[in-house]
Image (tube, rainbow, N blue to C red; front, side, top):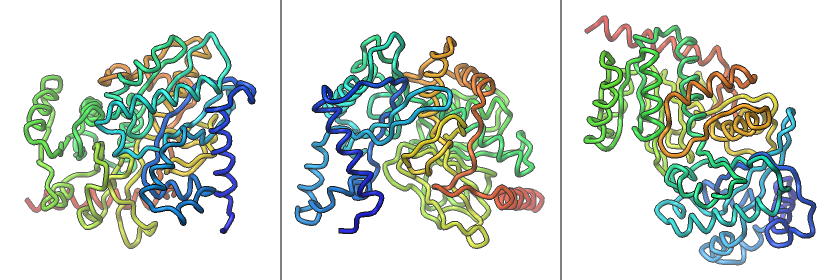
Length: 407
């Protein structure tokens, strides 16, 4: 068996996790300010994340191998300290997203395992430990309400991270608009998926005078959400479009930017569904919009990782799908911000249930005060060149202006 870095790293992760779960008395408890809960995204993640167990994959039927893997306790994938003195961990269940959704008993069981391993890991403290929910955990826990009940002890404070996610996506849309010389009142942003996050993004973009094209598979919901938006933004220009793979390309071709905020478990578009010179911001995990080979001359399309912040004080060693380093998911960033606010005697509201729009502005102010910045433009782990991105955005603007002139 080829023993690369993943192999030895997986031994450390597995051994550390088993000890903290089953034999915590052998280990010294540590300081902990926040824990970020995630899950594996694809079955293939087992082969890289648990490379030391791949020998069993070769001798066992796949179904049995997956079954046994999922009986393991949550894995402590990363332990880190920020430069401002906060201590965090990233913990993953080995359950797949499909095994968490609509299975409340299984979800509660996994959350109790998380609670056990966090309790075994950390010292007693007067301050609350922030529990951040990543990936599909907010949806699987009814926007955090189930997790809040499992972590009901005063020692914990649960957040879905959705406020941070919405803020980071809106910040990225604003920065792309400026980069492409768009004027907000002219910029038409397509939002695919009008749920909790999609609606909050719509509200915040409308506050900045954007035009919107709302796209969803539920036509009745589209009409209802448009009416709800118009109650608050009565002069807004909002189009609604039923999601249909047969006409999605023509719909997107009339928009300047795209935002994907769906709760799909798989890709909803293929490369051929996306027009040339188009930029998507995709917040879905797993990814709903295809990433392209890093060759802008050939593709003229980018799918940027949505919901990210650049936090200089954080340097992750574990890759959640966007590389390692200071660029972190908005939901993880919110966990960090709550911990930082608590450590510095400030107050920030956690996000449970529906997103409170005024809280987005509160987080925006907090970011400016604490050197929490917009992320790099990432597609996967690639940092996208700003000049190439600018060229694509300007080309899209020219195309739309030409179409309007011809009409």
